[in-house]
Image (cartoon, rainbow over all chains, first blue to last red; front, side, top):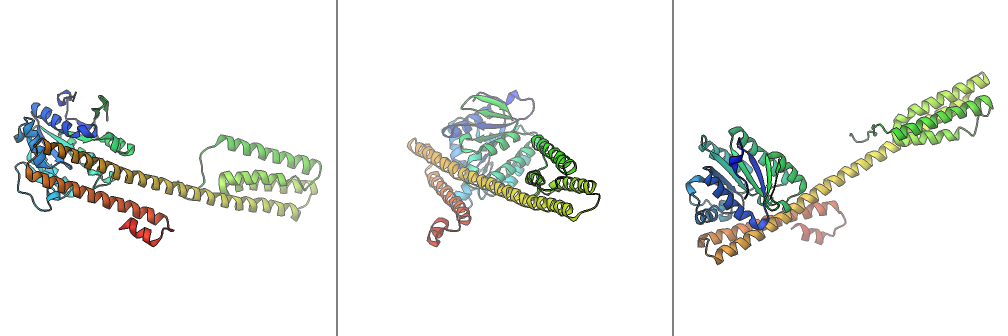
Amino acid sequence: LAFSLKDAKEPHLYLIIAPPAELRSKNIELIRMLDAEGYVVIVITTNQLCSVLTKNYESGGIRLEQIWFVDAVTRYAMGRDPPPVKNCRFVSSPGNLTDLGIAVTETLKELSGQKVCLLFDSVNAMLIYISSKNITRFLHFVTNKLRLLNVAGIFLAVEKGLDPDLMVQLITLVDEVIDTDKEIRKPG
Amino acid sequence: MEAGAVETDAEPEKMATLAFLTILCVLLEILMHYTLGVSIGYTHFFYVVLVLAAIWYGKKAVIVAACLAVTHIAVAYFVFSEALWVPVLRAVMFVIVTLLVGALSEEQKASARLLEESNERYIGYIKEAAMRLRTPVEVVGGNLLALKQDVEEKKIPYESIAVELSLQAKHMDQIRVNLIDLNMTIVDGFGEISPASRQFLTE
């Protein structure tokens, strides 16, 4: 992935578009890059289980102490409260935007004063549970929060699965859009 | 724009056409009525102008009707040196016909606008529904392939496999709910669907 958060003078918000088959590997690549740059990363996962991500990161040689999770799928999949996991907040379902928002806010508060980057994986998976209108509203809330707190943010998405109108809305929320497939960078 | 309102965009071609035809009517009035003393026949041409104005500008076209009506009555007064009821009756008809066609035109435009808005909403809904079906199916397909790879490479803990499969099943169930939601909208939009088909699509 040919970009670095070091380039940005201020914490930036990025929309990273990847082919569906590469979304998972991009997640690991990004985490590795952010870890190397000394970021504490908050991973909001709406598609992959926290336990699976943890395994993937471990096998990718990433320091797990630097990774915090807001996991919206494990509790939902299990149908009960999972055993507590360090640095992880479980949300009842990916469609519960109120709890998701609270979990993000609490995690950001807990990490205040540190060099933080939020990684949202992924916009496409959210569409199973939420309308595009509500996704835009939620991401607007998250991006506003990140800007207020001076925190960097990366939103992962698969372009082909998104309606052009939704794509335009997402682009307006971020500072830069990076299409990893076409190696294109453009301002948001 | 509010429903029932008439387009107010400046349309130079229409304005020019109307101005030209109105001037032509006034010239006819002067030539036929004032100069030649003919007071019937030519006024039929006025309706072309009035109907066009009413179609384009709705009830606002009554301004043109009023101008032609006043001109017609005034010329009749100058020609005959007395107020006659026939020119007045013609002038009143100019106004009535213009108001009638104007009202119908406004109604038709409002209906067209409503239909257009309804189509836009319907297309928007279909686009959203298509995205919320296609994308999730791709997401689940990708997840299952990734899970298969993880299992083959023994990269996933055994207990996580069950949770992962359960998650994909829940994703699929939600996709089914989204599909039913789409079907319900389609069923509501088409009244002639049989009860059995309606039940099949929405349950």
